Length: 410
Image 1: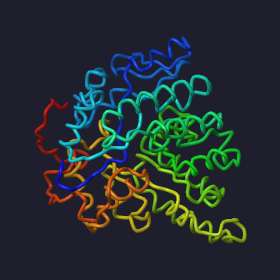
Image 2: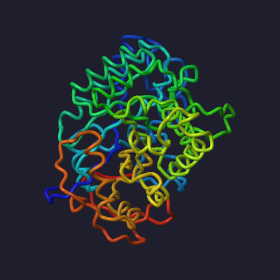
Image 3: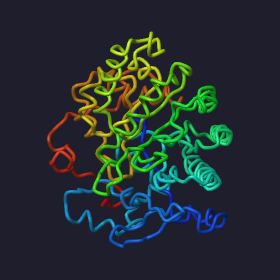
């Protein structure tokens, strides 16, 4: 795409293969994370090395699937069979970017989400080190369009800092940390300060993706299996993390440290910030809270958030601050809006100014990660479609549009 327009996904993924985990088995035997199929009806999952099972891997490949249809359930057994070629072949991935009107992607992991819950530090360090090498190699085949994020554990801070530095030298533009801390060492603890300081000094944004908590259900106290806390209510867990980081003074002590709240969508953020501000004022402000600024001011200086197709967040962007909002396609996951990103963006950003569209799809992500793109102004944004009912996603009970593409789509 050489038309001078840009659209950058701040939340896309690779999906770790079965073979990716084989070196860990050689190192740790039965303690190693590995892909297993316990129930053929739900397909492959990650065994964390202690019998606990991770997310359904098939879901990482189910883009453009209407989950309201019975056949969607039948697809779960297919697992890696559903993978688009672009999941592993960079040339094919660039073709998928062309199809979707995308010029670059910031890359997160998938299968190792649940590895953040492993407490064995040797296993954690080896898994993340292996991943950081693997994804860096993948992205190196198109270094101007694919930008990886390293994964880090935070039990051993010296090791985490060393791995963050190593990853930055390999080309990683940020690092992923648990979206919720261990309950016995929350992010309010000054123990983390040397890690925050290192990330600030290295200019490495810290990303907190959904499903990456150090404990199940993002630390929410939901032990009843009938509870669905880990899905639709997951934002409540990361909201606690945001509140802890702000109210404990982390953002005051490290004013240039950046956190990215990823794939929790954004409709909840304005309300949470309003509540935090009111609690600050009602609690006596700086006199009793010890912070010179409102919580929402720390959000604007230290935080970013990603969204896919969340119109509520866009409508409340004046509370969230459009300068903190990043759009991502979530390719190739089940939540992904691939291959309809441009149509969906034109729909949900219809009421936004050209500058706001540019900030959410280009400017903010380029500045946050220091990506190698020259910023020229609102005319640089690719979004120029006229919204029509036909482009709404199945989540809005309307059919997807037809798309011509080089490879078959589920």
